[in-house]
Every structure is written in C-alpha cells, then in structure tokens.
Image (cartoon, rainbow, N blue to C red):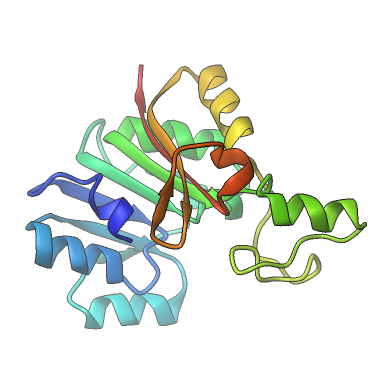
Length: 188
C-alpha cells in the first residue's frame, strides 16, 4: 500500500470507496493525519472498519454518491472496486465529481500471465484474480490501456498511471508487466 499512500498528501480529506476493513484509511489517519470516510457494503467489513475507529458508512456504490457535494474530498480512493460495480462510467464520473483527485486501481487483465492462460484456453486465476470464472465477484475485467481510453472518452484527465507488482511500482510496459493497474485522475 505504500505506493498508494505516497500519492496522498498529508492532512487530506479522503473518501475510500469499498474500504473493506478500513486498514488503508486507518493508516492514512494515523501516519498522514488525514480525515475522511470509508464506504462499505459488507456487514463484516463494516464492523471491522468501525472497530478500527474508521468513520464508515454502509452504502451501495451502485446508488452513486449524491449525498456528497462536488469536491467534498481532496482524494477519492477506488481501489479494487471498479471491476465490481455495474456502472463503471458513472462511478468514475462520481469519483472525479466528489474528489479533487481520484486514485483508481484494478486487476490488469493484460498482465502477461493472464494472457498466457487465455492463450491456453482458460480464464486466468492468479493472486490478483484469485477466483474461478464462475464464482468471481468481478463483473468485468479491464486493462491499463483500456482504462486510459475510457478516461479520454469520459473527459477525465489522467495525472499519473503505473502498474504495481506487490509493492513495486512498474512504469515500463505496465500493461504487460504489472498485475495491478493504478491511475491518478481528475476532472478536466
């Protein structure tokens, strides 16, 4: 998570969409004096985040973020959630509306081991995509290159993009060499 936390300025107001157990938001509050909220749907994760002391709201991201005004937050995190929402375009628009900046990450389907498994006639199962095709929570798969094109089509500016392999930032050929894609975005 260091590669992500390094992107977030100290004292930022942060909204973490799909915050899980709240570990990242807790870290940002403790280490960088950030404030903000987590959004989570799962009851167990919600309870774990609350027990950690994270301000967390139980909301379905499919309903949008209409409860928040434009630029209510300095940073909106959408880490490993975009592939699980039905209306990805709407969620991205909401991310850059509510936050001055958004940080989005998702499994990069174009990572070379995934390509190899598809070439062998199978859907990939990796550390980043650990589910079988029939039990995955992911509604869609995407690539670093496809996300760049989508942002252009939606009028969303890409400030930075890179891949992650563990904690290592991948700037050279991230669409091929990185299992996770990361983007820093903002409204144009």
